[in-house]
Image (cartoon, rainbow, N blue to C red; front, side, top):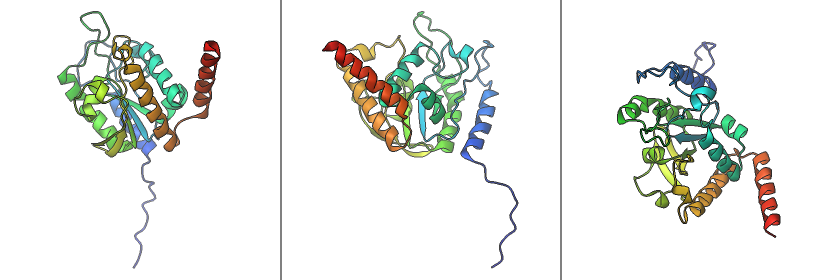
Length: 235
C-alpha cells in the first residue's frame, strides 16, 4: 500500500492553538462596554493540564492585565502556595480563565465588584467552552460561587468545598476541587468551621497537583518554613 505524500505541515500544538484562541479572545468586544479599560484578561499558561476558573476580573486587572492581580489574587496565591505551588509556577502551568473575561464594574452597594449579568455570562460562555475543549483539563479549580455553579450542583459551599469531585465538561472528565472566593467582600471563609474546609480543599489540591507533576518545590519549601516558624513562635 503506497503512502500518501506528506503536506509538510506540522500539526498544531496545544500552545499554538491556545495562542490563537487568546489572540481572538483579546479582540473580543461582544458586550459593547462603554468602559475602554474593560478588555478581556488573558491567561499566561500555554501547555496546561490544569484550569482555574474564577468569576470575572477586578478593577486592578484592568491595569495589570493579568488575572487575579489584586488583593483577592494575593489571597488566592497564598492558598495555592499552601497547596504547594508558587505564584510564578501557577501562572505558568495553570490556565486561569473565568466565567466572564472583562471587568464588570463596581457593585452598586460599593462593596466589591458587580456580579456579571446573565447576558454577559452567556456572551462569554463559548470562550470557556473552547478552552475546556482545547486543554481537556485533568484538574479543574473553580473559584467562587459563580464558577462553582458552572461545574457542580448548586449546593451550599460547605457541602462542596473540601471534597474531591468528578465532573464532566466540554473537554471530557476532570477532577474538580472548588475553592471559595478569595475576595475580602466574601465572609464565607471566616465563618465557623469553614477555614478547616478550605485547608482540606488545599490539601486535596496539593495531592492532585503533585500527581500531575505541577506543584513546585519552592512553594512547598516556603510553606514548610512558614509552618515551622509559626510552630516555634507558639512554643
